[in-house]
Image 1 (cartoon, rainbow, N blue to C red):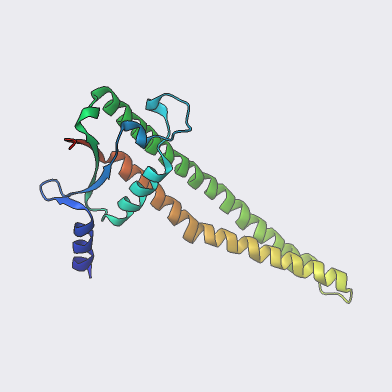
Image 2 (image 1 turned 90 degrees about the vertical axis):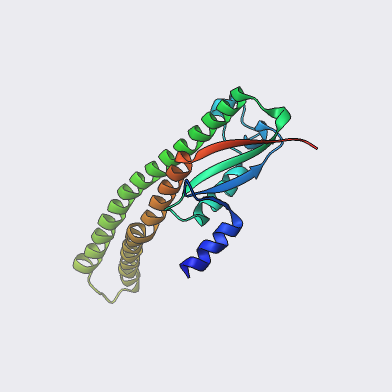
Length: 192
């Protein structure tokens, strides 16, 4: 199965044996095609275009972690400009470094939420079990059941955070770091 998956990936992406890298190839007409057109800041700090980002993310997810990634940007030879190359590299690095930091912050916030949810669930369950006994009044029974349901919901949310959400966030952090560390290569082609 691994060999079959590997050959499918090699058909989809160029593979460089000497560097053990897969190339994510993107053809653009100008350097500005990479940037978000609505972002007013200078190019070095400008956000990356959402379609470009989505393509990079999905491609990087396809490529096995043991292999390196090279982002190959194909441009017309007439557009060659080393200053704009540097600006693209800087914007690329800033964007993915920021994205990794944002996910890391979400991961840290998740720990706090998880602790809160778990503690609150234990308080609700303990309160419902020890302090509210079953009575003949339907209103008190509904309140008691509501407290139990709330306790179980918060407990489930904390379990989901620990076993699912936390893993997904960690995977995104690693993916952004991997993309950030990948080489950017500019390849210029002659116009016909």
